View (cartoon, rainbow, N blue to C red):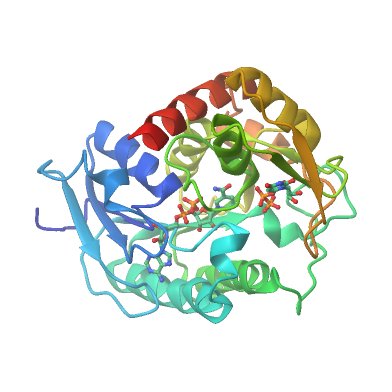
Length: 316
Ligand code: NAD
Ligand code: UDP
């Protein structure tokens, strides 16, 4: 495949969300260029696409410049789980900040539309609940999550400066906790941890008292929201929250996963990690009105799909 200005590029395309996005774009008839350095992504996530004449895979680190001809860019490259982004925090900030500069520079040169996968972490440990896009956040700039949170905040700043300064066609989505098949089994995120532990009948590790809450969006819903945002007219920049507003405590999540897997696991309590947000829930009023989008997959249904995936990979 030779890239041209109708090609859609996905950075981080071999990761969890990126690989599902590549699937969706191929299904919509696009030519897709998947760019990844395989830090957390795997070839296995996209192996079913290799050989498709409309799919191309490029090993590349976005902290270095990239010269290709593309019409749209989804910028997802960045480790997303605390275990992975804290493994090499300097590289995490570089990926967000230098990566954004390089991808924005590319978009400027080839006049491509570019969408940034930002995060609910820009809200930090929020005082406003649920979080609307107008909330500026409460992030500890020197804590252990800062390499990710501040990196993503700076990337948003860069996107909006390229928009104001160079009239670049930008889009920013703030993604809330998303789960589904192809999550990394060792990424330490709560859904993958609990499912793997339950399938192995090991203790379920609840951090803190398990009363902290999160809102979980199934990957198919999330990808649908991202593509809808990319399809909005120029000038519709966001930021827009994408997530499922249904909120659950970690204890409720653990109990649901134990029930759905028929596991013998018991709950065990461990210290809460530093700067762990107490609660998080997206206000998706804007996504509903602007994108006519809201998530449709119920937690139990999404968990069943995810459990089936982990069952097959752990047995493989
Ligand atoms: P992931 O770790 O599975 O995917 C990230 C991908 O980026 C991996 O394939 C990794 O190898 C690649 N990557 C990392 N550094 C790179 C670099 N320097 N150059 C090129 N590729 C690089 O994580 P994910 O859950 O799929 O997240 C994708 C994006 O969505 C991330 O930007 C993340 O911040 C954002 N996001 C995800 C969630 C979520 O709940 N999954 C929530 C908020 C935001
Ligand atoms: N968590 C937990 N046990 C685990 C992994 C995570 O209780 O084995 C908790 C964690 O402390 C946090 C919540 O689950 O309160 C979500 O954690 P995750 O790392 O998945 O996402 P984030 O904190 O980035 O929202």
